[in-house]
Length: 421
Ligand SMILES: NC(=O)NCCC[C@H](N)C(=O)O
Image (cartoon, rainbow, N blue to C red; front, side, top):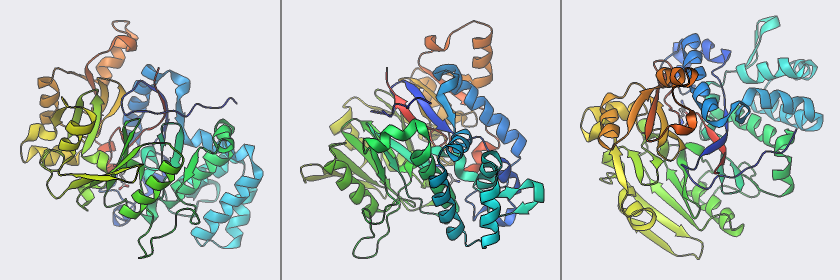
């Protein structure tokens, strides 16, 4: 298996390779009582959710090419077959984290790579109708578990217990899968879980940082939200590590309210074109309960009162801010909640979002974008009416009645590992 290139210098350069995960059977086992603990706001109907995700993957494959949309489940199975030592180590960690009896450990060791993958992802061992541990329904949000900063890959550390097995599996894949071997050899992995390198602060503040908070707006500027999930201490620790390795020149801490609806920076702000940013006005434009600190590699700092004023001063003087719900209440709140600000760019000016945010669509149209449903676009590709390479200034909308209940959008559901070209 050949090595994969790890290279992302922006949020919008043509997407070349991405990690995704299809909603799996574990998600169909969430009871209403545990939905909240597992960070879902509702129970979901899995077959429809999978259909919606399949449409998303079809769109990604149309633009990136089939072999470039990598499924975490496949990577896990391949990694399990490839590195026996690493597999043992990972199972030890999971068994101890989940406090499982040694009989379970033996069962896990005895399984084939395929069966073990299913158990590790769904928590369920079907042949014996045995629930070993909780499902990890948020594994679909691959953005949160890792992200690329220029040529380095950062493995994040989740704030919530419900996401910790995702973290073990991701670390294992990066460590053991042959396509990531060069990254290890070249020392280009920053693993926030290494407590020797990333300890708590002297005041006891933990290191937690989730990828939905991280955004490389420019090769020299990494924005990180200090949010419900990401601590200022984690941001400072990561900044120091990246400065020491010369990976980036500025780390920008965006302080956002500690609130479920704004759990990550990408729930209120994403970039879709060279000068276009989709955002939730009260925080990003008006700077409500928020400000921003720039940490520079030379040790100096600056402060801005809003993301908008920072972007205009340091990134793009003629930036345009397209507003969730077209900037009007209650639509801006409703559509921010259903991920109206959470888009992934496939290339500059072409981005994917949900089909349930009509007022936000108005702001796209007013800014000169065509809004087209994924079903119509995929049909147009099939009928040979247009090629993916010809699509310009377009927002592609996805079916989303079930996916959106998980509280994350297309930005959250992609971990880009290669952009450019
Ligand atoms: N980047 C993101 O905003 N990811 C969405 C995460 C949603 C998930 N249910 C969670 O609460 O962690």
